Amino acid sequence: MASWMKRILSAVAVAFLALGGVTASGAVGHAEEAVLIPGATVFKEINPLYPLIAQTYPIIGINFHDDDHPQLVDYSQNALASDRALRNGVARAARVVDEIDGPVVVIGESMGSMVASRLARTLANSAEPPSKDDIRFVLIAPPEAGVAKWFKVGTFIPLLNYRVSRVPESPYHTTIVIGEYDFWADPPDRPWNLISLANAVMGMAFVHGPPIAAADPANVPKANTTTTTNSAGGTVVTHFVPTPKLPLTQVFRLIGVPDKIVDQADRILRPIVDAGYRRHDKPGDTRPYLANGGIHRNVQAQQQARDGAAASVSKKAADAPKRRKRVRDREDRRLHQPTTRSTDRRAERRRDPVSAESTSGSSEQPE
Image (cartoon, rainbow, N blue to C red; front, side):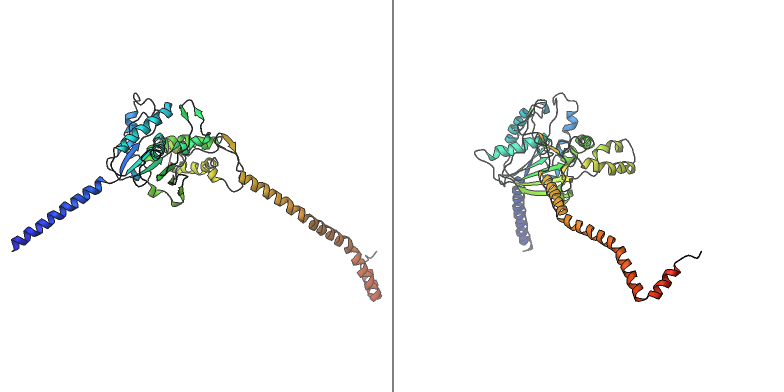
């Protein structure tokens, strides 16, 4: 009997494990797979540094997926032929995504984010667009949300063979990750602020690339995360990752200058750096800034300043009669005060002539 019961229990256990194995296998098969699209480089085929750079690609968006074996999109990445590289990247990435059976997260960094956003638009406009539940996108350090905004849409930049665009909108869930002071994704709005500009240029080395690619959204302050819905109906979550130490002074830390000294320099320089960014402007600030290929001012702030000035002038004009009356009253009191005193003395003499004479006499000095 005991032997028979053991066989039954063993069979049940095997069946349970088999069922569990099938369930687990199915879960893994339908888990979200990650597709990584790296940023730009130059002379990829002959660049001696490229193998070292490529070693950092697996960390792209590492905190935005759970895939142990993400797929890397191999495309030209040519920064000097950007538009061609973007087309090549979209075609290559589309093939990779098409071969995946199940949910996908496409993560692009820098130029890779430009490829990813164009892929989202391409898929949305295709004959059989993927479901919103089947694909999402993560754009890390997107230049088209940063430095490209200095220029008008459609401006051609010959050095890069690139025609300026903005981040395309799509119906798919999109996460945007921007590192503070990253020249490509967070350049100053006032590049004539040379301290702010130099800090952002140094941000290309100390914020852009691996540092922002490995950013963890769990460490981003809630106040730095926004959620919006674009015109295509897609949800866009933007994480603005703070940079505690100025990139401009990081080189001094690297050469061994004590942190205490560099921190003091940071405290002095940060207000100057931040003055180059509109997000730090106080209400009513009308300083010019660069956007869309031109110099602009905060129109609302200008209007507020005009309204404030007009209100001040109106108040002064309304108060002018009151001020004049107060001045006249003071003058009248000053002029009439001696006369009133003399009248009081004469009245006192009439009431008590003897006392008045003695008082008058006592005030005379003896000879």
